[in-house]
Image (cartoon, rainbow, N blue to C red; front, side, top):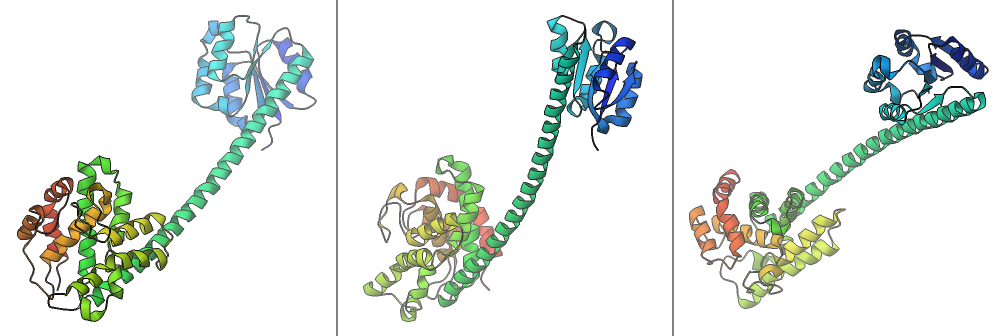
Length: 365
């Protein structure tokens, strides 16, 4: 609706006449002489009002009650109000501005000044309204675009998970291990990672990072797909040369992640590379392939290293029977399965019951 009307709320007949003469050539004029009439007109004709000129809000009479009501109803944000006054006090004007009056017309009137003042106010206010509409439209478009991008990102994320699942299952199939192994590793990683996050904020872990680390742990043994069958499936003790070949699955896995697996997720690829290469490093420096020591090993690789050992101990393999969970915890804490940091061991013992539950829930058939 076009805002082509000026509402004049004025008790004085002469003032209403003069104001009407000033604006009648360009605007439709509506005149009222009481607050009640003014409120009624405002409720019925607000969308068509370009500006309201008002001289009913006299402090001695109503203490700005009407102005306060208009402000509370947010009408002063929808239509510009200009006060007509012969008051000279700064406090009066300050009070009006505080409620939302945009300007003042002081008696006696100077037609050219009044006309220009009102024109300026109307133009600025209309521009403000148009800008607000554009901003609102842009925000709606951005919301729709963000929703679409979020949907696409979620779809991509799900596709990545399917690919990760497929790759990890290939590894377990070649290694004659059950597909439950990968699920246990991921669950163990999330569980231990959450414990570390709560106990040791210095590692700067977050739920988002832990989710990514959990999925990246699925590819910790991806390098085993290039290990010859006669070595990876050997039931007896490996020779030194064969053991060196087995150890190469760490560097081969990192190379596969870096050069073969192309996922549109930089954080995942960084974690997957690090975990694949360093999940056999030990806190005392006696691991491989890079002989990292202490906190040179990322917390992600430390976590996967421990859960991989725990799963190996509690699972049946071609070369050994499964240990019970209590024995596995004891062996890890006592250092029989390699050195881990005291922080990691503390976080591990805090969730040993959760680990037992994961072993039961994802047991091999």
